[in-house]
Image (cartoon, rainbow, N blue to C red):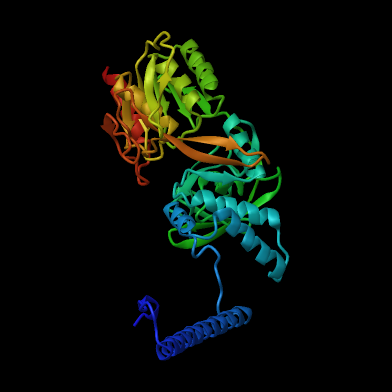
Length: 427
């Protein structure tokens, strides 16, 4: 019953007045008692919470009740309380204060950067330290460096697969063979490293020796191989014994390859070469603009395909459409013909400018760009997919030759080269 809503008559007797006054006093007493009980209970609760916090039993996250911030963080894919930068700083603080041992902070930073780029899951996107980038630059520019003279590429996460040797290769002289898997260099395991980084461990100062471990048919072999100055001429030529076939081998595409190719091509023409064999076997690619320069010499069209980027934009592989070579030729390819050398292969095939003979190419139809960072380190990242003049991509598919000819370990002669000569003789 709500006593405050009782309507009193106009006049009350003394007994009625006393009764009403007594009821009101009782009501106030009840209200005060209930209020006091609530306050005491709340006070004890607060004191209890503070004690739990003090002794670590209960922790209070000030963001836990910030609904907007929590939902916003969750929508951004975060954990709701820290971002990556803050987390790394927190980890660094803990390790700096409590890790028992010496720390090479620069090496730790480089490892974090490598792991971050690697987390994208693209084997062609790589972080390079300052020293690694210097080595990469020397290779791209076609400069001389000191190494053991192997041509290799990353193989199924195990290390570097050897598929060829440079001229007068110290590695070949020491006993390495094609098909060997280099798994370690000077104590550095190469498993899981990209080709450029792994090859860097094979290089060093002139006269020093690289101690390498090699896996061959399930057996582990060890070699000490002297590092020598390597001839980085990427194009070599000769006249074959028939006196009319010029042979051009392109080992890779550096910034100097197209100029070297033009020089060797002109030399063969002066020697009265009537036809050509252009060997792109084991050529794993390199600089795209250099490959386009070679196409200007042997295809001479105004369009060699295109690159398509993430934002939908397109960049055309433009040619200058100069005078055509005027002599027939064959391009030799195999399973290691990749990237920039596949640009050449695709354009030659699409324009029917020459005959492609060998086995299906590797199938790397994406391009990478190198961005130098403020401290001299760099990242290489995949930025586009490539397409042939007819609009076809060869990425992860490879390019089928006009004529497939297998070259096996049991062959005692170069059957692919012989097939090229047979084709030219049939014209």
